[in-house]
Length: 343
Image (cartoon, rainbow, N blue to C red; front, side):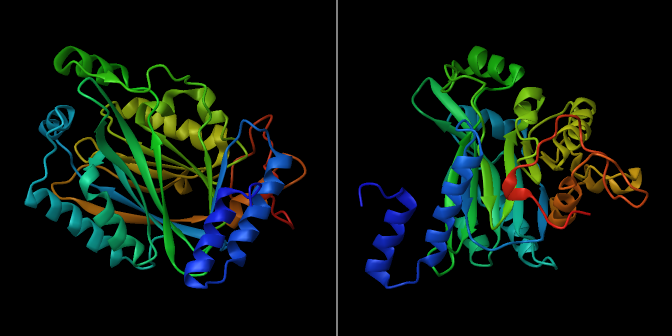
């Protein structure tokens, strides 16, 4: 028992209380062990769920959060009005009505109050939809705060539908954000002493590998390239008005990471998109939205199997009918993403 991993202890405890079948959890633990021998210790893989999805559908919310909302959250006086909750609730209901049903719904940076995370996640989880959202500032004390991404991912490892909640902090604020928080509100970032070199986790959710970044973190080219070969999709939660810069970063990330790159931005600025490392230019933006007077949600399908099969070739040589751009130099495919036969 002392040598058991936390996931195994959790499974045994649940089995004792509920009498459920826990083989999927043990299988996931075996996968953890295999990956630990095949990858660097610095890389963190989080296995959740045991299904094997060939394609996934992601839903992007086009929701507006105003500067007044930002000022209130910086003061730890979050805007929790009925009208704001109704706006978010309507987006959740619109997501539930989408066909095909999304696997994930993404909300932009700083768009979801912390007090509403559970109710939103429970509504989506009941339909088997996972939530990935940027939450409002968490105040550690009177002088320190931070922002986070919350991931509430569907899970079946215990033999019945469940979900796992993961909090991923933004390690450093954007330059303008840092200045405004300090000069106007007297706040400092809670993680200012952490190293920006800390590797972000790779989530392996029902067989799909993805990473999450929060807004200005996308500008760290070293952090982006660390995902190369390890992920199928990079999800970026943003509050950004420098659209030209971020458009270039998203287009670059899709090619140098060679993965589907998803940006969901505050509707006030727009340009949320799903970018593919596709060979044909007209196929690169699978979805792209900007502006509008109302909040809405749009979905896009990502072909995970097709991307992996292309990346699994022994060489970088291309063929006439290829769907994707050639792999970048030095690209190394993670063993758990290898697809045979390659195409």
